[in-house]
Length: 218
Image (cartoon, rainbow, N blue to C red; front, side):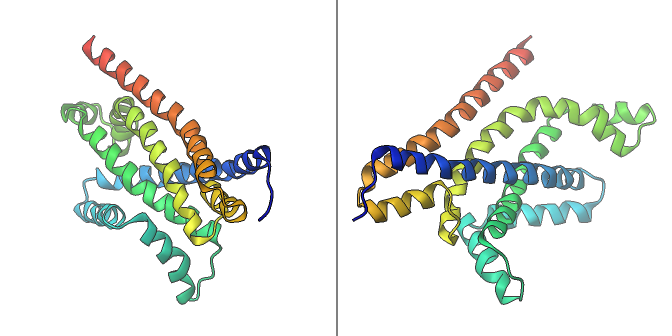
């Protein structure tokens, strides 16, 4: 059995947590960019684009993220596409995140009164201008709280990356546990680190929700 001091364990867990944070930020940024494109397609006048986005959302929301990671990491090499664990995880998490964000944002856009589209059209705006200058600024105020709240889900979802061998927080916790045979304190530390990352986001999302409710009440 390998001897580690408590400080060594905490230090290594904190070092690995930076990869969890980086992975979450990449997935959220990439998923947000893809989600905006998908949102534009979903609210466009073209039915074929609606169907494509609906199929995309159903595919990623209707299958477990773990299976998506397996398909990305083990399935692509069967097609002759060699991918590293990092590439497979970031791409899969980005697609997974975009499927949920486009659904969140679609609901926010649809909550804007339809009369706003007509008012913008009466000013001679194109469809893109209507969405960019009139609809999205109003929808964004509604979308911020659930978007921040969903980031918590993204952070927690990164734990599944350990299944395909990516050394992030959960994987490091597993490795240290196998070395020192002290599962309870180590996994408790891992849980506390996840909590420390997620709680501020959860708290901020609730603050934004309260502000939005107060603004609507006024």
